Every structure is written in C-alpha cells, then in structure tokens.
Length: 120
Length: 112
Image (cartoon, rainbow over all chains, first blue to last red):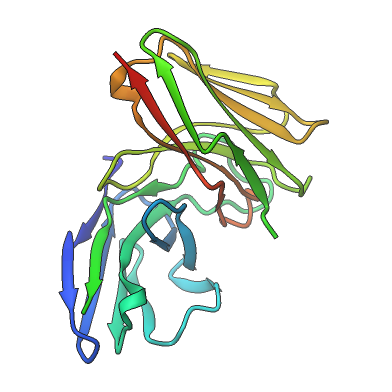
C-alpha cells in the first residue's frame, strides 16, 4: 500500500471559519509533510513532522496550525484564512533517514491527491 | 534564491518522440534528485529518482541522466505517448533533511 489519503478533497470556507484537513498513511513512514501548491506553480513546503515532532516550519502564518496525533495521521487546522490562502494543500510522507541508515528507494516522498481549498 | 532551475517551461513533442527536461542546481550538498509527474487535479507522483554516485538510471521509458560536475540532471522520456502529457517537476533534497525543493515545472504535451 503506497497510498496517502487526504480528506476532504474539496473545501470551501469563509474567512471566519475553522476547519481541518486530514491526512493518513499506512506505509510506516515517520516523516510527514504539508505542502501548498498554487495554480501553475510547484509545491511549496509548509511543515515537516519527523517522528511525530515538528521539525520544520517554513515561516508559515499562525492561521495554519499543524498537528501529528500519531505516526499515521497528520492534520492541518485552519482558522481566519484569507482568500489568497486558496490553493491545493498536499500531504506527503516518506521514510525518515538518519546518517548511515537506508538507501535510495526507501526515501521517496509519496503525495496524497490534495485538498482543493477555496476561501471566500 | 532559486535552488533548482528547470527548463523548458513547456514542451510539445510528437507521439513516439523523446521528451527532455533539464534541471540545474547550485548546492553541492544535495544528494537526492527525484522527478515527479503531476496530472491536473492530482497530487505529484514520484516517477524516478537518482543519487549522485551514479550517472544514469533507467526505469522503463524514463531515464535520469546526472552530471555531477555540471550540477545538472535531466529527465528523458523515450517513445513519448499522449498519456505522458502532464506537468513534470524536478526536485532536490538532502537525504537526511527530508526537505524537497521543487523546480518550477515543465508542462509536457505529447501530440498524437
């Protein structure tokens, strides 16, 4: 099973709403990621969780709040978003290598299908 | 600062032809170079990847060529098919950093 599942597929929310995006993987990966992708642009890294701990925050505004409840689940809590936050939000997972551990082939990052978010 | 530069922005190839997409990077510490394929409305899918200790890797119709001294790598799609029409992204990473940085993307259209 090489699947990363994201829900919901589509989300429309008002600027005063609170909503959450969910991501699940069962590949035993210990690194999980949130990326944001605008139309005709490459994915941009937002957050990285490594062994359920936040390891990278790419200076993302606090209206985006990530959470990793366990090794299989990743959430992104949304609050007071702006229309410019409308985008495709992608979750990904990969093995988490440490120096001296593993080889290419176990490192590939697998992406979910994304949540298309529209902020109105 | 753009960490990886991808070209061309778009590419039109006849069915059966060879599609070639190029990427160049600056940081010699990068040690993982994947290519992703993305169809409209879908997430990127890992296509093929290479480490800098090899110069070429082939999987089916897809080949990565890697030139460490020039800090460049490219994707070759042999016998291109209309179903290959998609956006292709190169990426660079540090194996132990788990942080992928993507190129700007190439929109490939294969004409039948």
